[in-house]
Image 1 (cartoon, rainbow, N blue to C red):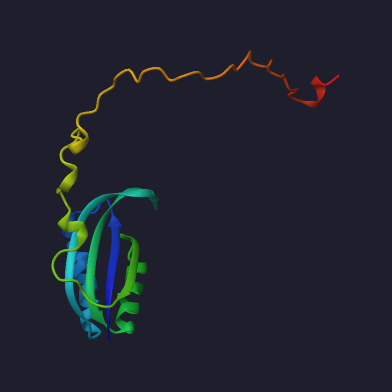
Image 2: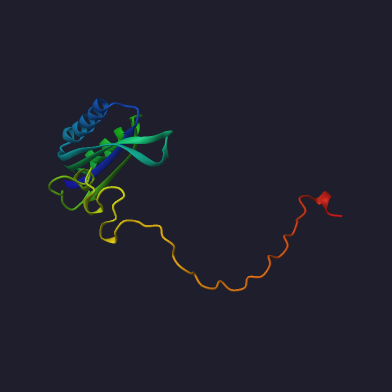
Length: 156
């Protein structure tokens, strides 16, 4: 058996309870086929970079599991058949990380950035006169704009 990570994106219009139901369905498929699910995280409803099947948002769910390739193939087959699942991706990994994933550990934590509008060591943002910019050179007058013919009939 090998270690895998699977991330799935479910439709935005299903409830959190339905997302939990999907999670239980797919973990059940893995367990029926001899796999073990080490970690499950629901990352919540997030905005997608682009529309997928007319959805702008999606519920993200993460699985870390130890499964046979046949179990992973069966789970992915069922994900492909389920109309609530927009996308999924399974990746083979070397080891399952302890604790939360980066998606959950950084949730709500702004870290070193501070609150919105603060600039840290650089001080507050000031819009001041930048001083003389120097000579920009002699650009001269603009050349006249050329009018181009829009169709064959305009040319004579």
